[in-house]
Length: 192
Image 1 (cartoon, helix red, strand yellow):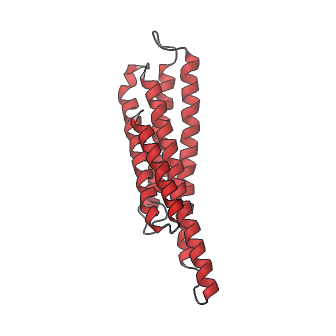
Image 2 (cartoon, rainbow, N blue to C red):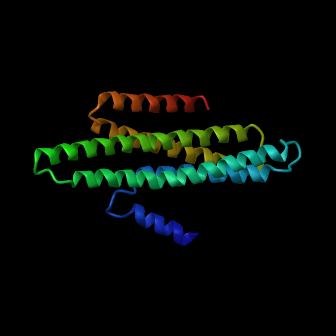
Image 3 (cartoon, rainbow, N blue to C red):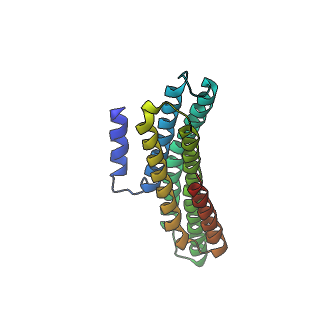
């Protein structure tokens, strides 16, 4: 495991910025989900707690979220790479310029949509942590708290990645829709 973590950190530390804050935010959310699964499993069969099936459902849901968020980090990195490629498209003729502009805009919209989707997943992780926090093995309190902190960090990072891309989207209706959806996610998070 140590080699995998070191390898990932080397990718983050590279001069190629395609794997950056968006990917790291997804990994934070995935780690949060992993911790939630662990705490749920540690709560199974403990006296005075919910039936084991309750914690099994939480653990399975957390595991799915961890996998989807980890994959979301890859998708975020790929989305940025598409925009980088679009900026390198030729612009010698009016047609090439139009194709390049269209590709950049399509890529920028995708670069905002991907972290928005990942922000929703981090909110779901936070919600799952809140559900688990109602009744769990309190010997794992610090683990559950770490999960909540990581999920919040993941959500904040995803939100930052949405926001940084919005000014680059020329279609204001699209940008406003994405911004509105992000604000809704953040408001829902406050209620968790």
